[in-house]
Image 1 (tube, rainbow, N blue to C red):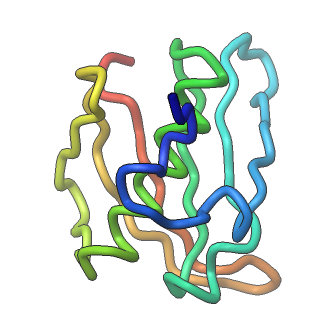
Image 2: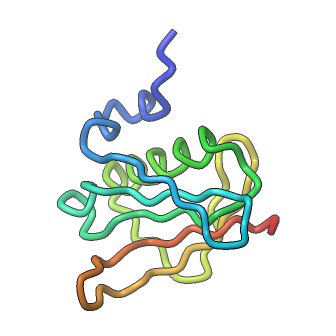
Length: 111
């Protein structure tokens, strides 16, 4: 059995991008940001810190990247997306500024 979360899309997203975990100050929850997916999408993906496990958060970032690459979808601000395990996230597009690339922020709705 293939445990790669992007296997359904037949894309090697896990080879294209790396996941970097972060933990905001005074917060026990973690989030992730991709690095390396911008050449394919035009932006990186951030999943804001939330109560999900680090594995689920990173899986969601990879699956979102694969979905956008395969479908060409343009996710709009305040659009809601649901993971295959039922968690809901709200989309926010962040414009590039200074030394930071553009990115798609996904905020967990159960926060």
